[in-house]
Image (spheres, rainbow, N blue to C red):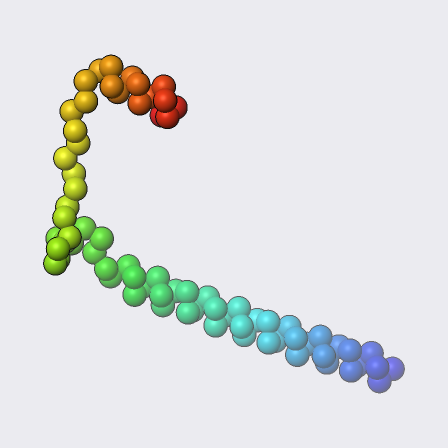
Length: 72
């Protein structure tokens, strides 16, 4: 009978530790999310960074060639 109570006690300890670690993990991930949410992804590049947005004007045959060659 004592072994059953000891087993229940050990299972209870593991369950409590699991729940505590789960809550800790959740709140750490939540804090990291809030920290990175504040960063603006669309800031103006600083330093020697170059903003690239201009697309080359390829003629129709070159675009078709790329389409068939790469399958895009």
